[in-house]
Length: 163
Image (cartoon, rainbow, N blue to C red; front, side, top):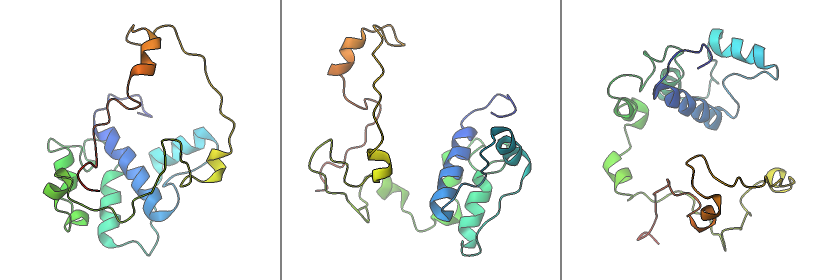
């Protein structure tokens, strides 16, 4: 993307690598406040890992953060299946994931759609700026219809039957 090349789903695996790196390491794999220097780091620097990271975790992150999208883990014809086969996920029963049989280690208890108790005050204390709606959305639909649509129509996961 930074080099203005065509890109496919491999860019999503790069994004997964960045988010996973941040979750595992507590920081971004590349960071600089100056965007030009940040882009240079992304394009040129090798990734550094904390010593505490397991070999499988390092291998997964290294694979997801390969700069060449054609060589990136998940960048081949097997797409996500290539990632699912990675040794980091050996203990994962993907059929159980698909069947929604897994119990999460933490389930937030919320009282309403606006219950924000699990969000850091750094975010909830920010001032909300509301942008006036357009008369029509990008699909040419009357924007007033948006109020009658679900909040996330493309998000289909439901934990029903597990309570």
